[in-house]
Length: 118
Length: 113
Picture 1 (cartoon, one colour):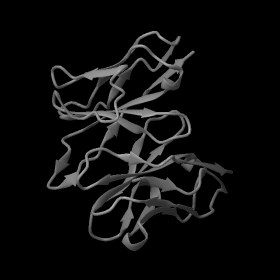
Picture 2 (cartoon, chains in turn cyan, brown; picture 1 turned 90 degrees about the horizontal axis):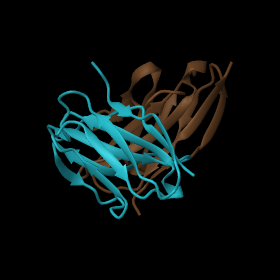
Picture 3 (cartoon, rainbow over the protein chains, first blue to last red; picture 1 turned 135 degrees about the vertical axis):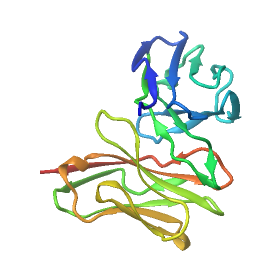
C-alpha cells in the first residue's frame, strides 16, 4: 500500500517569508497529524484532524501557523511569516481512526519536509 | 510536567553487543507505549507497541521491550545488535485519555562493524 506522501522534501526560505507544506495520508485513514521535529528533539504534535475536523490544535502557534484538511483527505500546513526558530522537519502522519476498541491505532509517518529559515 | 525521558542520547556499540535503551514517562493512569525507529534517510516507523497484557513485548527485527508499571519505564532491548540497527530510536507515550504521541528526545545508536 502507498505510504504517507509529503511535499516538498526540502525548503529554504528567508525569515518573514511564507511557506506551505502538503500531505496526502494513506488511503482510507481518517486521522491526520502534523508534527514539528526540531533538531535534537523528538517530534511534537502541532495539529490533529479527524476527517476534516480539528481534534487538537493546542500546540499550534496560531499567530503564524495554519492548517486545513478541507475534504477530509489531503492537508496543507502553512507558516506565515516564518521565523528562524521554525527551522525543523515537519512530519505528517495518519492512522485509520484514533482508537479501535479502546486501543490507539498505529500512526504511519511520511518522509517529512525539512524547512530551513535563514 | 508530563514528559517522556530517554536516558541515553548517543550510544555506540560493536556488532553482537547487547542493547538496552532506557525510557521513563511521567504520565499518570493508563498509557499506551511505543518505540519508533528512524533509519538513516528513512521515515519514522513503528518498532513495537504496548497497550495491555504481557508486559514483555516483542517487535520487529528481534527487538523487545519491557513495561514496568511501578517504575514508569518501557526499556528497549536487543540481545545482539547488527550494523543495520544503526538508527535513531524514539520512545513515545499516549495517555489513554489523549490523542497524540508524546515523544522522548531520541537516542542515536551507532553500531560499528
